[in-house]
Amino acid sequence: MSSSITQGALQGQTLDDQDLKMAENLSQVYGQLTGELSKVIVGQDEVLKQVLLSLFCRGHCLLEGVPGLAKTLMISSIADLLSLEFSRVQFTPDLMPSDITGTEILEEEEGTGRRRMRFVKGPIFGNILLGDEINRTPPKTQAALLQAMQEYKVTTAGKDYPLDEPFLVLGTQNPIEQEGTYPLPEAQLDRFMFRIQVDYPNFEEELKIAEITTADGLPELKSILDRDDILLLQRVVRKVLIGRSISAFAVRLVRATRPNSEEAPDFVKKYLTWGAGPRACQAILLGAKAHALLDGRVNVSTEDIRYISYPVLRHRLVTSFAAESDGVSTDNIVERLLDVTSEE
Image (cartoon, rainbow, N blue to C red; front, side, top):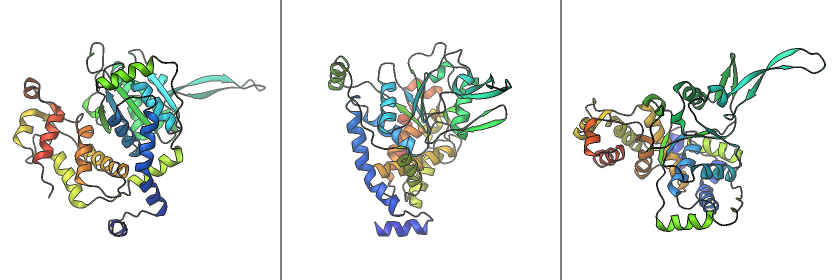
C-alpha cells in the first residue's frame, strides 16, 4: 500500500488516512448494501452496482428495461439504505419544466399585506430523482432536467438555486414501446454517465419474487451510509491511482469508436455512423476508479476499464443500417473493440 501512495504523490494524487480507511472499508460496506437490498429486491446485482458507481462518481444513469422489473422499488430502497431523500416524477407529454424544477408563486405577507414572489421548489430538489419514462416528455421539459444534471442548480427569474448534494438522476426508458415518445437526442444521452440494462430475472429469481411480493408486507431496511459518507467517497474516487498506460488504453478504446478516425477498425467503419466523445473517456476513467474502490483497491486495472466500458459506451455509439440489418448491437461492438485495442 505504501508504494502505491508514493506513486500517487508523484502523480499529484494523495490519499490521507481517512481516505484510505474509507477505501478499505468500502468493499465491506458494498456487501452490506447488497445484503440489505436483497431483502426486498431479488437479483439485479449488476444494476445496483452500476447505480452506486454512478453515484460515487457524481454521474447520472439511464435505466432501460420493460415495466415490472422493480426499478422504482430498487431506487427508493437504495435511497433508504443511503439515508438520502428520494423523489419520483412520472414523465408525460403534458409535463412542464416547472413541474420538475419548481415555480414562483405570488403570496401576501401577514401583517403588512405586501405581496412578493416566492419560489416553491420542485421534486428535483432532493438527492435521488427517478424520472420514469423520461422519453415521454417533450424536449423542452427534458432540457430543464438535463441542465440541472449538468450544472447542479436551477435558474428561475434570473436567480440560481443550488441543488442539494449528493444529487443523482435516474431516467428510465421502455425499450419496447416507442409510440408517443420523444427519444433523447444523442447530445442529451451523452449527459448520462451510464446506460444500464435491466434484464428479466431467471427462473429461480422470478419464483422468489412471486413468493415475496405476494406475502404480507416488506421488511424494513437498515441505513448503511449517510450523506457525509457519500460526499467523502465522491472525493476519494478522484484520488484513486491510475497508471498512464491504463488511461491511454481507455483513450485508445474511445478514439477507436469514431468511424472517421484512422484508429477505427474496419468493423467500426461498417457498423457505426458516430462514435463517443471526450466525455466518454472521463466517464470510463472515473467509473474504473470507483469500481476499483468497490473491489477494495486504490489503483485501477485494465479489468476495471473493461467492466465499465459497456455502460459508458452503449448509449454513445450511433449504429448504422448495416448494424441493424446484421443484428449487431453496441455491446457487440464494444466487446470486439476491447479485444482488438492494445493495452500497451
